Image (cartoon, rainbow, N blue to C red; front, side, top):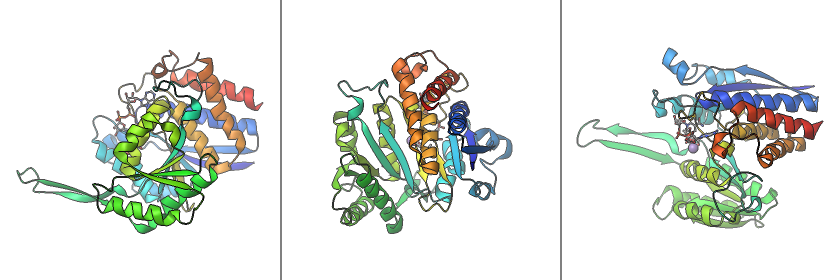
Length: 359
Ligand code: NAD
Ligand code: IPM
Ligand code: MN
């Protein structure tokens, strides 16, 4: 019996609701597989914790998390806590503190999921975005001068190091090489306007590309790629983007696959020196929180990505197949998909299908 220690941070809003369903599926998978076990430790960190203690997580939070095999996070953010405090105090702190430099975000339309594009089928929308995840526009370098004066200036500096940029590019090229689809890597740029950071990004993209002669490459400005994601999503296989651009284009990607209720992600420490962290792309959705309306599929898909990272067991793919079974059947869907089922009922329906597939 192999045991995995998972740190669970449900966080705020719908993070709590969808987390229960992710854990339910993980437990069922472990039970059906028979030779693995997950043990969970829950951490109450988030905005409620902040309102009580003045801290988003304990001061020694990273030291505590270091001892786990993996981290699962629901979502962070609450209307009465400024977002830059809540996110920099927890989510971004973990991503940067554990050098989770690659953010892996699959954009895949499952059969039965509602695609907003007419004439697009699952085979047309199947790509992965590799988002640089610890520096770039999110480096936190800058400041405010002359606060509240007419001459006030806000400065937010992007930092791109060669070491990290090369590492992320290599990861993206490796994935393009092994994904076995088109062997194509698209770089998201904006070097027409960002004449230092993105010119450097383009240079590293070209340099690393020399080591991958089999991978076809292209470089597209972020504004144009936003249009092409809609017009010809079938052109993409692996897309690499800086932190901010990756954030923006993956919400767009989420729309292509049926909405934020489908978008999963993994923040990877590729050296395996620290735990990686898995979280859905969506936020705490205060507009629907606490009502059982949240779609748990993104969280369940995220849990499956954690399994891939820990076990590399092809059986985990049955989780995606079980989600597809539920979508195609169309009986247990949350309101974002036009259904009336609760978060919990969708989780139960996916478990039911998973059981039928794995027993
Ligand atoms: P959001 O993702 O929370 O919500 C955007 C819209 O999508 C809302 O209408 C919401 O109801 C809907 N939605 C999101 N997830 C859904 C799901 N699983 N099922 C059904 N509908 C879903 O983004 P926002 O409104 O910009 O942000 C709300 C809060 O979450 C803010 O505090 C923000 O900073 C935070 N946030 C956190 C994360 C994270 O923790 N990873 C990600 C994004 C936003
Ligand atoms: C995401 C989120 C976060 C990000 C926010 C909440 C800081 O939007 O994970 O996509 O921008 O990385
Ligand atoms: Mn985002």
